[in-house]
Image (cartoon, rainbow, N blue to C red; front, side, top):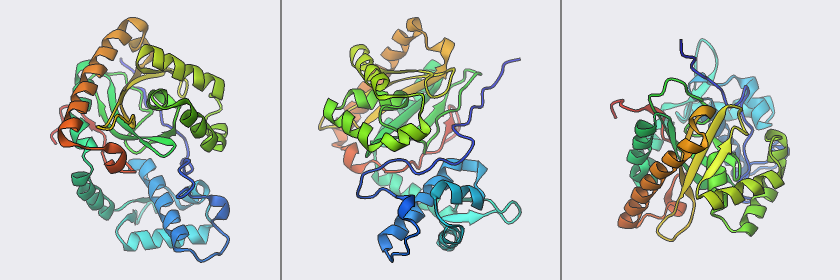
Length: 310
């Protein structure tokens, strides 16, 4: 009997990850009582992201309170407003909260404008089919890397540690290493500074010297490699995708169990990644898409298995 690995990213909801200073949600300032429309929007967006992270599991009020850093009455008040707008909904039996139908509508409409996912979708599907492993499209957002799309191959043993909507700091995971390796050194150090508290709290297995070594290795190999650092047994590799201006703000990546990503197979996987990167970059050049400006800030792509009807 083959074991199906079902590794969750976290047993609890993640706190909002680091973003730029201009729009970072700071829970320490959430209950100051200062009337601020921007702050209210930030709180609502933070809760929507936390709901998105739970996917079909949903979240209880206490989970959302803990993850957001908001007081319970404030969190409940925002959730009621989101429900009224159709952006969230509450199961009448379990009382758990989920993204609402209007979130799906908005994501579908936005997908028509933000073209990178559309241009790369076939490549992600092809990578999953040809490797049998999980394939991803990830993009940079401020000091984080966000997964836009996941496709599963047909290999029966899988490691479910990354899904559409998940985000990690730059330098963490295969996607984060890949994108960091294509950035200037000064910008990498700036990302470490911006994510310092987050890295210490949620990524104790990583430190700056190790992350610098991983970046140096990625530059030497031509692809980022994560040897199960975030989740033991779950390996990943990625290759950067550049937009028409040459900016490295996206990558294609693969994830598999450790035995399927050893050096002899890495050569094969790297060639498959390289071919799909060429295809995506050619499409970007044809359309004139600059995914740094136009790719969505949060993932609307849903995980699908290869072969499912679209």
